[in-house]
Image 1 (cartoon, one colour):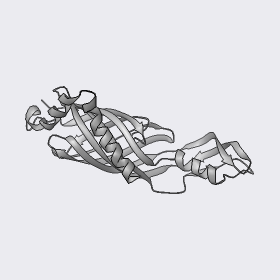
Image 2 (image 1 turned 180 degrees about the vertical axis):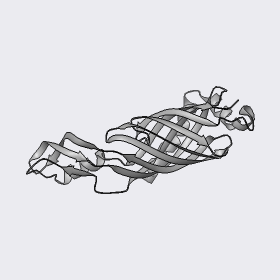
Image 3 (image 1 turned 120 degrees about the vertical axis):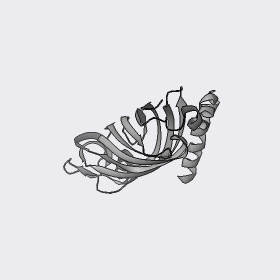
Image 4 (image 1 turned 90 degrees about the vertical axis):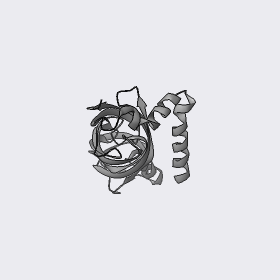
Length: 208
């Protein structure tokens, strides 16, 4: 899994160059000079989407720079496990909250009280009813930010891993049915947690 995550990071970093986005890369490397010291955006509002995206299938986010190298943020949206919210800290390796960054935080899914799906059981594949319990995850990820235009807006790619903090995350409500080993593995795949790959846009406010 570590090798897969590293490979994804390399691929994600290469995508903008392969599609002719060199100007984004060069602009990001000169962010502090081009935007101007003290003129970096004071807050970012954005949207994101992806696999195990901290903000959900489609999420909204706010990111507040504490310094040119550190920001605190959060957001939320809808996921396949109910509503989802998160909080995160990011450290940037280039000034003005650009370039490469690492982030770590906590996400929380509210769950779904009445969820129907098909899973492998002691009677074979069956339609079953479950209660999807609230789930909290710890996540860590890498980011690559590029500028969009000259107004402090950003585009980013993200890859990382989300760790589920509890193994008690569902209840099978169907009577006289239990999940076999395959069914339990299917639930592990459905539940929040695992490889993260996401893309997002954030709009800078309060800068030059």
